[in-house]
Length: 147
Image (tube, rainbow, N blue to C red):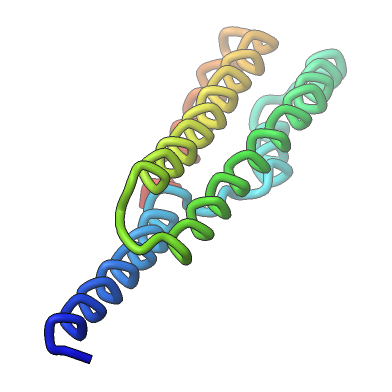
């Protein structure tokens, strides 16, 4: 192999390693593992002194939301797998890689919007006094994940 081919092979190898490392680091930074919803709901129910009717309404809301959330989380997993497959087979950054990154960001955004809408739907079930505590609990939970 000529020296130019060796340099090209080394450069391509470094690009692939950097891309895989970037995806791994990005996944760790931008997708921290979410705590189980059950833990958040335990805190919520304990802190808010919910009526039986409120609890029933929140549980129904959660059941409806969990179907869409499960679907969106699977879409995100599929998008990540697609990018992983491309990184394994594409020799250089290209339109396919870029499209896969956009697909991941779109799935993450959709999941985030779904979550925030769900939080506001939950909030509507509460009394004004409960909303104050709910808002604090939600904000504290988000801050904890930002650490």
